[in-house]
Length: 262
Image 1 (cartoon, one colour):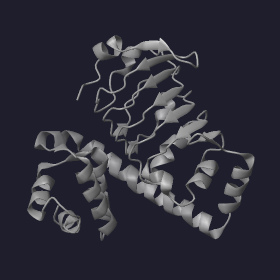
Image 2: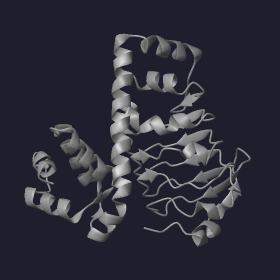
Image 3: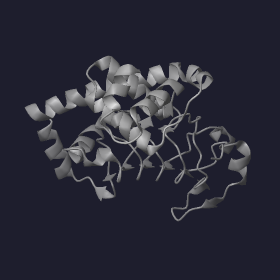
Image 4: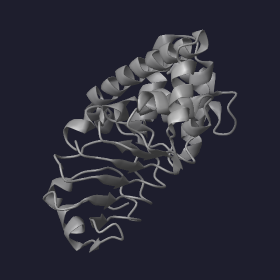
């Protein structure tokens, strides 16, 4: 992995792209987290962070010029709240090939009032029932979703669906999950320093899948929040790793026991 330093930013390729926009190419460095983008001095319309190892979309500085973020083929599973305040003119975000799971994970994007192009192909969230209707309803300014036009007819159908009992229940469920995710994220941020001092390692894809299975089988809200905190942080504390080892690394049957003991 390569740390995103001011030196790397200054040495990376910069060019005018086919849209005649100034673009910074930070592809393929396996960068684990966003940092030091203030070194760009807000000189770019597009920043390409594809093919890295990002787990969170966060820590952006004030970049009012930025219009497009390319984030293909990372491991993003959380989007931080409040990003619309630092990149207020973002109009396009391409998140193909990431790990966004739930419709509630997209709630932070609703704050972007100029966001008219979103791509979530090859994310688990894009297979959710009524995904396209939800996006058309929650993002009234959206023109392109997964490179397909959102037509006026699509918006009308979405409005009609979310006036039904099923649609209203769906919105309530998404809102509930969003609150749980936000609480888990805050808890993770509050304990980041503690986690770093206690040791641990980054979770690999197998670890992440096992934690998700444990969340599905969780028997209490506290258990869900604890496991969600680990999932959102992307780090396995030493104690959790030890219990994974005790319960075996293969299969998901042991995941509930791990979650209960931790």
